[in-house]
Length: 396
Image (cartoon, rainbow, N blue to C red):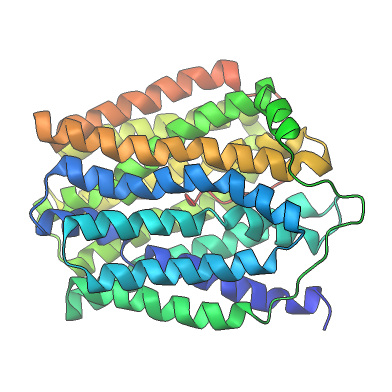
């Protein structure tokens, strides 16, 4: 069976990989608070996911290149994600939540290898465009997981969401053995430390990586962080948190596929990224003043859309001008750097929330979005047409 005939299987494994790590994400901050922890501790638990993947993403890419294998890392990534969900299902302490959510970040670190293996099924000309397809399936896996997790938790309790994630991961683990390994090209050198140094000095890569840190700061402080906690203050049930996730992730996915193409073609990369951050700024600032769950849904719908048009362009620009043989290096560098925002955002927001209230945390996040919109004028290349890649805005 050819590589392309195996693509549907790869898509299923990709969806299950993200499914097992995201069934409980909308519930995580309320769950940690339910265990009696502070907002700061909830922020550290949420942020541990970004911290650990920041540490392992580049080393995993280098290791994979040196052994010239991808499939074992894909299988291991699904296995570790499953172990993370199982650990969360079996523990009932904030320390356990911190440990096993951090383990999910280790699993997410293998995403670099996932994308490199998937790109190997395509020629250099079509590989960047194909990234949009695999990103779409990423978004679907995360969205289905978030909605289903809230529903099962509402029916059977907090830990049902963890068990659901583990079940999806077990299925994905066994299916991953049927993925076809594509051998690297004979002259492929893979990721080298010298390449990392060269990419790390690239002005465009550094600029868009800086903005991506801020984008992930916003996303993991709001959609994947403390917006669910704000919803519980308004009386939201676990099922309501599923709806909250849906109304934010669906516009996010739509924006990443269609919004970016339309807006970047009309306004250019720079203005489109700025619009995305300004949209997030506006609707994050509104959260502390919302006293109705329905209006909170509205703010998150626009927030999801705003974040969905900024991040895909930044991802595309991180590799658009890089030589094909260095794209994996650039993407690994980019993903490792933006993980700083995944960790720092919820940690800082939680500390501020304990000090002055959660509303104050959202206002700080709103200011971060404004700063990012201003920085986009200097850090985003001014080309009129956006990158051909249709990268998904779902934070991975």
